[in-house]
Image (cartoon, rainbow, N blue to C red; front, side, top):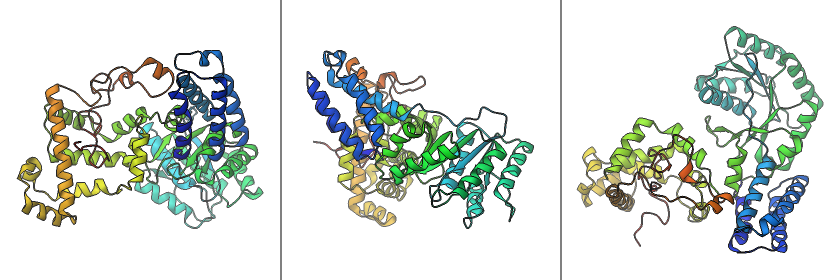
Length: 495
């Protein structure tokens, strides 16, 4: 969502980084460009004015202009102001007598029902809570059945449907069931409208008064741009909301709505939907979003994602093999499967510091999104002996493998060549005694870190392994000597 803004700000701030000394006029010219970039990203004008005013005032100060790295200091100031604009990250509040009522409100089509199920799953998995879902939408055809299907498919609690029951009665029955059956939270999915009207607001207000919710979360679509800010303001004024859930963040929206909402409504963004899958809902971390916008990556989120999708024992087993320089096609298959669990390649690269340019190259080369699936199919078409000893694979076997997976012999050759490159690199690293690609990485320049250019990979949070505070050995292609995955343009090729 923030790619356009990230590219524009990256270009402006790169110019400042390259200059040894800055004049006040240089900073003001850069801030004018930042202003245009924010307006083009659909950020509300009052928010842009406040942002530019605060950033300029700090950036033209003597501490910046006379510092050793003035460009880096300006980057840090822009980073800090972005964090201020986005507000503090807040979890969904469950600090009340159970069951905690959570009211979901919003316009029709914003993703309210799906988000209700996603949040229930998130609270169940991440915070170990027992959550009951209840649909109060008696108007949209099959809305109650939709929530029931989502709940049943994912093992979530769902309030039985009683045809003809009114929304306020459903809400009261849900809270009563929650108390009797020992639920920690009850998520109430209210009905939406195509636009805000008095009937909608009156019904939501009646439900609010009946259950006295601890959280009233407004679900809004990031794709609707500035209009979503207006909707948020209306609900905040007439119903009262405690937080915002932003959906379709993975789309091509310009990102201005997310940057504006905290300032306009005074309510924090608590959760963001990062994909269509039921588990693709995560807590909103302003500092991490600010890092991504400025191309600094998001290593913490990347490691969290790896920890969720990679078993510790599998990671350690793989790490031991890689330290010995051992790597066969079964290992490559395991890494491909792990990568697919973590999401698409461009999303992973967006979390790595300094990889913005390569990510852009990938999009320009129109890399096949099914690349990992195709490579997995090729390996699965091989016999166990061929996977353990790829040297056995000659011309006749290649034809059989290609026919088995429905791809060409050239595709098989590409995979084998990439495997050979990775295997050679891993053997060299095994001899060097490295624990991972980042195992021997030197400490970052303090001035760079002060300027907010990228996180210090040598000082990641406690519990990270991989040598010198690097990434964990189980993260495919990053720690454990795995090498970057096959298919990355410009990697795995001998010059």
